[in-house]
Image (cartoon, rainbow over all chains, first blue to last red):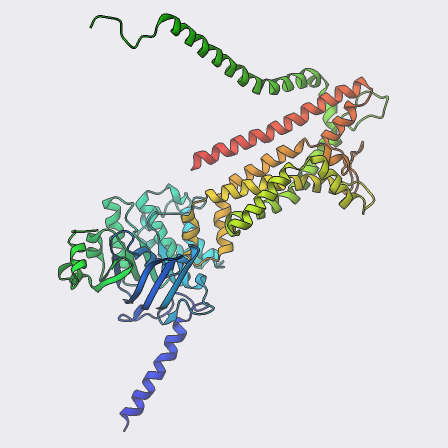
Length: 288
Length: 290
């Protein structure tokens, strides 16, 4: 007699918390409690068109929180488009259209009245080519997102500067010349600076679009190491051309081909015993 | 095997060809000289006629009344600088914001129309601007004024500033816009703070080019700023400018005034040259930093 009401209470009690914690906008980003095992992106029947050309077809996938998910596939398979849809960056290309649902911690990213600006504060992005702002110093680059979003408190800015650079494993290399231009750093350091810049606004999720494709092996190894530490606090989704990289640093791997999600599973299984013949052919290097 | 090479031309053909080559080269060199010769002619005459009349008084004194020799163009020099500043206040915001609209917001069709209008605007004879501003800003207020002169010059800056701003904004790589947008920064802030700041030197260059272009304009000032033999104490009243003073002195019957007109022309030319040199320095820095 006592078990029934308890179970009935538990369900509605947990729901409001979830909804408030995932509402976009004024909720302080990054301060949200994210539990392991939670779903970061819940995507159902998602399709995307560039004008008349369909780039993504009916993708359904659940991306876990605080894990690294790798997106692999040959060029033109829609993996970058998929990544950009996760924080609505694809909308910069005119004439795009979507169908289906895409939720981030329960919040509908494409719901009516939802602003892309609010989403991008919670879902950051690191690009293929490092792009520190050329007019700004290292410190200004890290803090630009906070400053432009109205943070003026010097103590807060200083703390976020140090935290972000530590988190991006760049602090020791730049702490003595924070006022030099961001573009004075090496390629690998610039990419870590861009990661620090993304982390400074305290997103919950970090999207990485082939972050190492322009870097040498040593710089690549550093970024991969960094991705391992980021997993402890952030959800990471990484698009990569490099299958060894996907195998080395991701927990889950999704294989895209011709705009469709072909297979999605634990990385170990994807690379050792994939269920799909196309996945097998791709990961073993027989096409793509 | 041992005969003359088949690639050697016959002797007569070779000399005819050499003559043709030499003649065409000579024509090209003459044309190139004809391009730069006027500049040197202008500088030569200005220095020959004007340099001797430039002294301390020229920069510090007002024009002397008719019949007295001496005096200077201090009020005209200050007037030109004032008018240029007022023109910048009018022309730079309109031009820069218009350029931002073209580069960042406009649609292709709308932009075509705006660019076409700007090109037509750029081709409107400057005396026409003077007449239009006369109707709008002089007739209703019943007085020639520095304001009217500043507006007339400012409007002439707009097309040039707008097109340069658009061009340099388009050169800012898309990756900077994306990086800033991905931080959750609103689009207008991305444009104002990131994009415009990256292109700032190019925009400044465009502004200075436009200022150099209008600094010597005389026609739009004839019906607006009018000219003034004394200091301007109120921008609602007529103001002197170097081109106006040169014009007034050059058509006068007095040798002393002719002398001063040459000196004024030399100073005006120096001002425009200085603006152009600033542009060179700015754009050299820009090339180096990229």
